[in-house]
Amino acid sequence: DSTLIKLGYQPALKKAPYSLVYFVAWMSEIISRYFTSGEPVLTRYGVGILKYSLTMNIDEAKQHLNYQPITTTEKSIDDFIEYYTNAKK
View 1: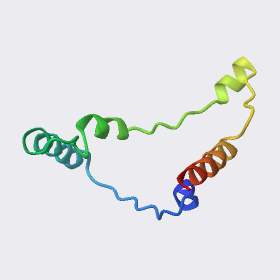
View 2: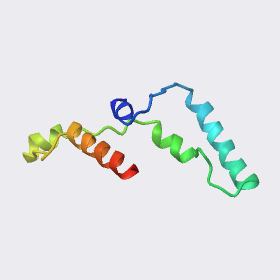
View 3: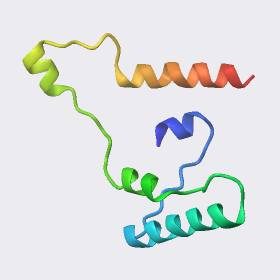
């Protein structure tokens, strides 16, 4: 959420049942295939991927491999936001 806020967007998180969203994605694919020439706005594959958290944890790499990141996640996000906002100008 903080990344969206830093980019000037207001996060709008809503919860919906997976089966409903999957059905809407399927309908989006059908409409896109038969009635438009563009890509569907939502796909069943995308819904399936977003169903799971994609947050990674590097604690075991630190513990077993003595891995030390050269920058923090927060610093990397701030660097991206700076790059993105400068690229839009």
